[in-house]
Length: 431
Image (cartoon, rainbow, N blue to C red):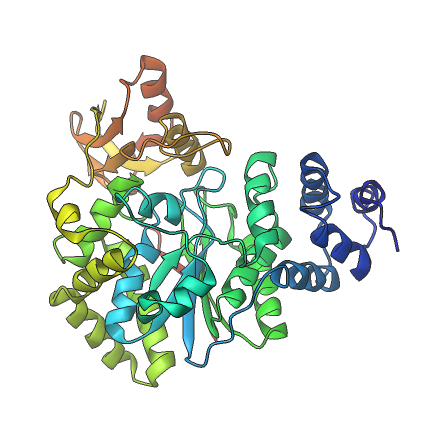
């Protein structure tokens, strides 16, 4: 066994297999003997050369066992998205599931790479608290409701530490690192049934279904080794999910959806699929009954009522929340179609980096997000548009420069020939 981090990094960089003891040494000394630049080098070596199944299981278990693991009596559900643009599913899902009688405690992260983060979005709500210890959750009224929290010191701390380093060192899109990070958080929170919304496309870390399926197999493997039921839902990320991308702007959209004031077919299809699959799994009902339950919750605004309870539970004063403007950007720029044709998003990754440039996301740990930066789109892939039509509004803290507007205009195309609408749900790998 090697217990010298430089030699361990060199071993993996040279495509050699690590022993269980060497992997444990790396994870167990993240806060002790190992420097940040050495962690970054090790993560990059793993990204480039991968981990075999045995190495992955050992690495995952070391990450998982770096903190406490909840073992709860009640059957609990959890969901994870691998990241995309406009993905506000968890924010809408948590209250819908509570209205369905399904327990859902979610450990979420901040923005990663060019994609947004659920915690950043929720913290755009004034006084919304995502920072709770396990003891606080278990000993207070927090445990009575569904909740979404950030990573705490005593829950998978090794993942929390490596998560931020991955984000700023170019090792975000590693199949093995993603699998270990996702499953360690889900299992630590006590979930017995875990659904993974695995994004595929230009706005995801996995650009094609084949590479996404490799991650799906790793997630299934880790679930099986830990006696968890895992459902993989492969969804399309060649265009934003919903119409809004940002932080407080996505909270605004989520509220409109929960109030049944706004419809987006793709967003609803994903939410319906996840909600009904959970409901069928939990209560052993038919697909028809599950869909009727979902419809009833939307039509009666039950999800919005529960959303307010979740806000209150996580320290938001509801009176202040209702009276305040959730979304109030300083400037907005209208983007107009320069010709007629069929609209098509060109590259969502470029769009994601544009959002970082207007302060809707961060490039480093020290960057400060402007909560009200974001984009509203008024078109979707395949829509026919006329010259002069409004395509989007960009919201910012400072006026956009000509170069920034040109940069944004490079993220979409207007084509002569009609394009086919792509399916939002690409594939399922069931429980």
